[in-house]
Length: 345
Image: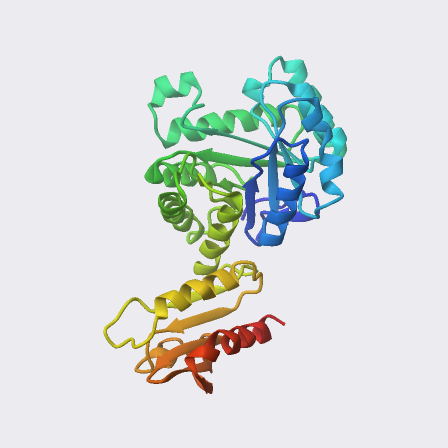
C-alpha cells in the first residue's frame, strides 16, 4: 500500500479513494479560470491544476481558494521563485521537476517552503523528458522512464521532502502500464496516473481507459487525470465513468445499457444517452440500467438500483429485479429520472 499524503482538505494514497484530477485551460489569474474551477468542482473534480506562468498567476491561488473547496495545484517550470510565490498564495500542491527548476539553491528553497507549509510536491517524467543518461543506457522504455522519475524523487528526498506524488506518463498505452508497474515496485509514494497526449475525447478516452483501467484493477494508482484534447469537464466525466466501471468506492453512478438488438421496440440508445447526461454530475455510487426489452432486462440488471426495460406500448421501471411500475413512453423520462433522484437522496 502506498503512503498517505494530505493535499489541502483531502488525502490520497494509503487506501483512500482514487482522486479525480483535471487542469484548467485559462490563464490562472483571470476570472475565466475561477469560473472554470467552480464548474469543474460541480462536475466532481477532486483536485485541479493550474499553469503558473508569471507572478500574477502565482498570486491568484488565494482568490480562487475562496470560491472552491477542492485542492489547487500550481504547475511550475524553470522558475523556482514562482513556486515560492504560489505556496505563499495558498497552492495546496506543487508540480515541478527539480531537474529543470535551475540551480540547487532554488530546489532547496522550494523544498524548504513546501515542508514549512505542508505542501506536497508532484514530480515525474514523460517520454519527452527522459534523462539522457538513462535514455542512452536503457533506451526509450519503462526503465529509463521510471528511473528518470525516481531521480527527481531522490533530489527532493535529499532536501527532506517526503510528501511526494510520482507520475510516469507516456502516449503509448503499453509503455504507460509498464512504467507505472516499474515505479510501483520501487517506491511507496502515491502514483498519479495518466496517459500523456492521449488525443481527442473519443480516442483519448479509450487510451486512458485501457492504460488506467489495467493499472487500477491491479491496485496501482492513487489519483488520475484522464487527459483529453477536450473541455476539462469531459475529462472529469470520463474519469468518473472509468472509476465507476471499475467499481471503485466513492465514485459516481454506473450506467449499464443494452447494445442494439432486434428485440428492442423503442429508442433505447437515445434514452441511454439522455440518462448518461442526467447522471453526469451524480457523485453517489448507484447503478442505473437502460435495457432494450423485458425478455432479459430486469434479470440481467437485477443488481441495478433502478432500471428501465422497453415493452410493447410502454416501459417498465424496476429496482433490484422487482418491477415498480409500468409507464407510457411519453411519461418515461419524468418517471424514471424521479426514481433516480430517490436513489440519490
